Length: 137
Image 1: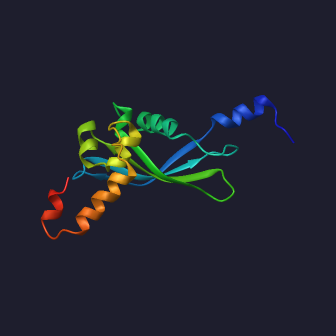
Image 2: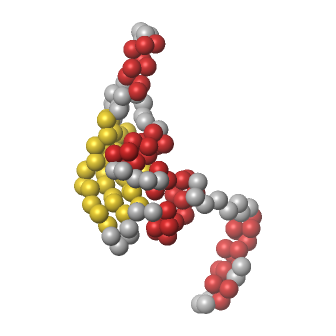
Image 3: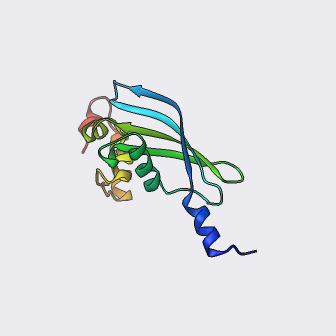
């Protein structure tokens, strides 16, 4: 029923990474691909670990330029599939990545707004028309 500690540890460290549909996107200054991760005997693999391995695989100078997201584990486990982006530099990443992924990567801070303020602003904007909506706070 329970595994040996040694046996569990050995299966815990192994994972295989494969990239599919790899393409270079010069307009967005990045390389993009679908990432398949095989991890038998393991629930899933940490994104930080995957970023580290991808940076090593593709000779990336800064690990923060690697962005991975959208992972789904296959039924039965052992395989996960997600999407990966490798930006040419941090400036390109800050320019093109959505704000929520920059916050996850630690490159931007989240703005804390109270729920009440958001709702009050929404209701003020509902009463206005046209360009006046943009001028409200």
